[in-house]
Image (cartoon, rainbow, N blue to C red; front, side, top):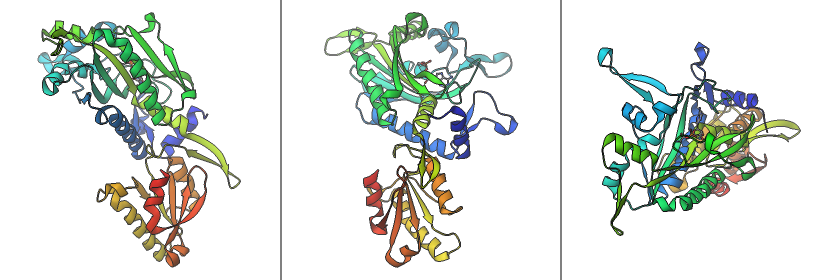
Length: 402
Ligand code: GAP
């Protein structure tokens, strides 16, 4: 495992993550995602959304406003129990009203419980999912993305019959581990911690933290909580809006209980980078590469002309690049190789090293032999192995290797 400084330096050098407001000396607890960090983040969000929302029939998405009526935070208990809240004001002068930047996305789902039921008439169990920013006025932000003041969460509130909570708690435990496996976090680095009562959040009757072996030690990555009917009951009382659920079959009316799988996206990114960071020796030289799963890699294929000053090589490389890029642009999604880049900057060794550090699974080099026989060199990131492939077979080759 690498140390944190090495990871922070790589993330900056390769355009993944920069310190927030850096030219002014930074702003503690804030980080800006660059071109490749954003691609990695979007890939993770998409995989999460595919697995938990579009890939299922029982979970509905929502994208609630970050600013919420301050009564939400009074009813949820955050005003009283949660000290890291970011106060802000709505309006100006004497008419200004206090509210808070949300410390969790969860409340945006509870206040839309009734809307979701009225729009979609789901039967229990069902869930609401949201990906979005959360803010906490952490006293000591530290450890890169781990403890920030502005970060992103991916949360599900899963509504169940009160008697079923244990069954679904176990179910979500497995689902969370399954998704972490999907993105390449191996089980030897993930440890479950049963959170004792005095350490649990005010709304939780049971919490499991999934801890990860970060470079700075074993720390919480994500969590699973049994929130009972705490939130819906409190919002029901405070808003006087009926937030119960009516079961048509059994003719029962009750307030559902909630199982909450919650993922901090930035911590997931830090865990993915920690896991992917690899050092080895290739051709007698030390090298660093990100062993990212292909689905997560910001760039799937980099196309290189062997030399920059040979117009015929550049022209051929552009043709190959465009032929790979065309499906990516949506003309034929089944033939897509995903995001690709053209790189003619520096000698070929430097270009390989750059793409290795970005985590690009394949580099395709166009050389003089290409002009004769229409074949290119395909080089695999993890092994450094190279093979000759006909240009016409490139998409198949890359897709099969994904
Ligand atoms: N809705 C439940 C909730 O917010 P939490 O354990 O306080 O629970 C959920 O936060 C996840 O959000 C954590 O497991 C972590 O991944 C992430 N998280 C919390 N505080 C964070 C911070 N200051 N910086 C980065 N991520 C944070």
